[in-house]
Length: 571
Image (cartoon, rainbow, N blue to C red; front, side, top):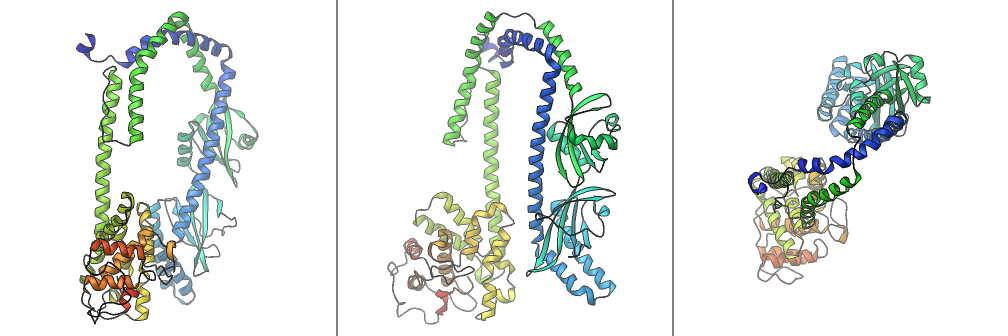
């Protein structure tokens, strides 16, 4: 009756009724023990917590160092930045002051682009001798005009300046195996760094260098007692007394002259705990173990059942991956039912967001393909047609749905590298020269380089980069053979050639489908994968092309160039 009138009872009400007696008994014993041995216990707890924080922060520092090294390596591969530095090195000796200044400004502009992406404290470029050519970042005004080249294998050093201490990661810059300087990214060990460390560890942070405080989150009255003698004794101490209070101390990082410590107040942790324990002991000193047993039994039966039901439903949903099915409410607990409804609402929102993201993702890829096709009216719709044909072939070959999706979008993007090919070559109305054809052959690697900047397109990279490889090893860019070429790339290769032959180009009319399929059969096993050719022929169902032939039919289009099948001209 009560449930019908007011709904399921609140979980908090049941919890308070069930656990009050048990908590009273347990807390009486625990708090009495804390009152007797509280100081030693808390000291060990604080020390252990600090040791855990020390390990965590050390691992975090190592990971951040690796990430910074990876970031430096990526930035160092910027072709425009290296080109600007190489131009400066080549022109500096025979240029006047104005020209040199313009060359430096060019480097600075490229460096500012890098800084706008990664938001560093310092990003700098130096010549091989260590003279700083350009610098950007939040602390660029503090960076010196000369920084010694890196001497360690990983390029990590500590740079001590009057304005502060910086952790620097450097890497050489080279163009065609010729050293042109080195790139440095540095982060300041300042108050912002100390605050981030404290937020992660839950303790105070102290950064020192050569006996002086660089940054700290300790209270001002405590920080004021940190003289040179105290700082020099910190590495050998496990506890230290500051401003009359005892602190546990641990060294987290030491790099060059800079050292980072975490400190936690032992007295500050002990005093409130003992006071709270004694007060709680007075109020919670009376308890009965029998009542606790009965209450515990009732709690287990009344609270565990709805939670177990919800947990089981969640487990079944996870195993079956049917996230679009709403979980049923139990009606036994207001909180559990509220949690179930919130979870159902969250999953509906996530599913809608995932669908919207997927739609946006596919739309962006189609926009890239349309932008490429728009450069040449003769190739308009080529990428879309190759995508449709590749998916048709993939389904004919029985590929799983996830591979079909990769194939669909990879085929859309297969020629994206032609963005980097000049219109003079790409839209030439006549046959290409050997030199021009070599430029065209660069588009797979250009496309792969473009897609590598977008991690969510990584699974499409093999299609873009390898769709012109051939089973006989005469393809490009790497000359792979047979099964070394991924199946999806082999499918796009055949679909690409078929569409190229059956579409009109500026230098020839469209060829009929029968002729195109006979050309595919003629080159099956050498230029094209025979299994894929068979699947395409079955998928497009061109009469008279279901079986391979050694030569095209006599009525084949006489104007069709024989080179078309061996190297599909500009597809």
